[in-house]
Image (cartoon, rainbow, N blue to C red; front, side, top):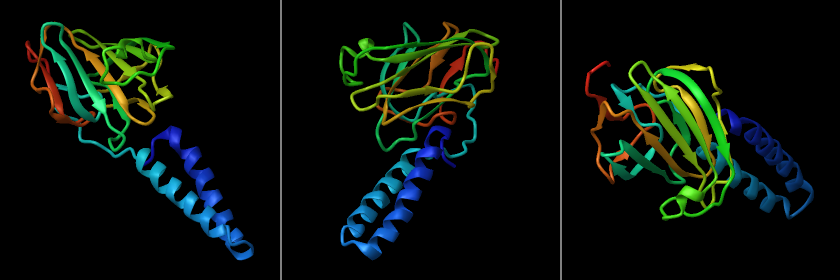
Length: 203
């Protein structure tokens, strides 16, 4: 399955690949063009992959990647998405979308100290037991953030809520009545890996 923003691009690259086949008949450069389109098609088909996931228990990860930072006092976690990770973001818990705010900014490294200045989109989600803030952050190469949800939407846990192109970082601020069950450096999967639990065990 492909992420929605990538479908049009895949169609265009496929058309370009077919055109390159025709050019191979009339031009020696056709082979080079064919190889270029083939490489791009394979790369973006892999990049925009969007596999089905079995939703995990309790509070699930909003992104694929490595836990880059965690602060138990502030109930904050940051997940770094590499180029090879699935880039689709998912809701950590079921609830209602209260607000979606996009902020223009810089494109510093997702690991750097100035990442707070980067372009980002804030999604606020209200669950039955508390509010979550999911922040999609663009990085050095990521120049486009696509958010699928809008204020007023009701989402299920693990539902797709957006995508960040070419990797970067997703931050999650959890309610105070929760605790983390993952550690820094751990590999997580969006919608599938349990990263936190409710202290009052509602799930």
